Image 1: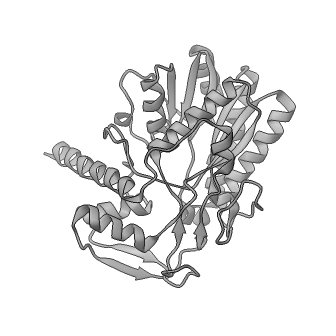
Image 2: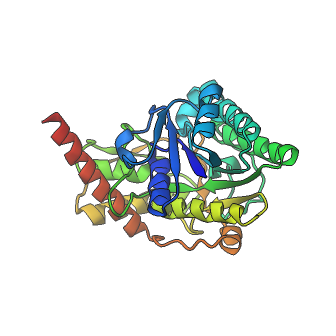
Image 3: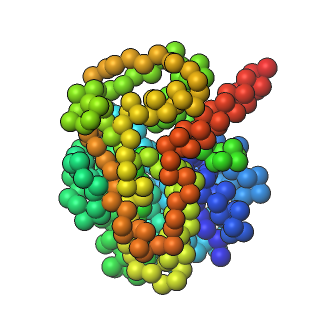
Length: 332
């Protein structure tokens, strides 16, 4: 039986597709290519262009490919953008997830893995945040994901669906084999932005706020390597296949790095002293978000391989150099 990966041509989704294909799992990708790229996924993997909100199309894909499980990545993910366009985020993230769930349940899909976010916690405080911490998102992005989690819980009770919601902390890095990585133009991920600045793609980068209540005044985040995150999804799928009950897990490493520490790591890896401009805080940015990972490590057979900031940065920088060469070649 096949696994449907929505948003499978995007950054995290494409890593998941490679992970599944490497394991010999039958997989089909559904992606509208609004932020994804067909070249990021193996040519051997069936690809369908379209939206998770297109009920007839989703039903056709599930039936034709005999889909037994869904890993749902398709979403809008930029916090400042969600503040400017909240209804667009509720439409794409929440309403489309509702449509996808409805079609999947009616088609008999019983295993569902949901791409959630640490943004559901809002201002969580300094201590590593546990899954039972209050969920008080401070952006429409976080709220849209929390609403989807609530729908999942209710659907599971009503229809026998079993799910895993994985709350990502800050995803970074790239496939060590450089088959895929973050390719979205004008991306806002800190490590990608720093790497692009280091190789000259951007003239400078901004640090948004140096007056947070943290050791160096900049925001602290728990950066998780995207390949480790893909393996966490595989472990979650194995857990569900073995009869595991629905659950919510943090996905991080349990330790954080500040914005300035990330910039220092990129400067070390690149050997470049690129320009950095200090700006004011952005709306929706909590001071610190670090995961408590006790639950996922005790419940799943998942052990991360790349939990080192310098390794994450090295892979991200290698990908940016390859991507720049690819684009230069395409223009030539």
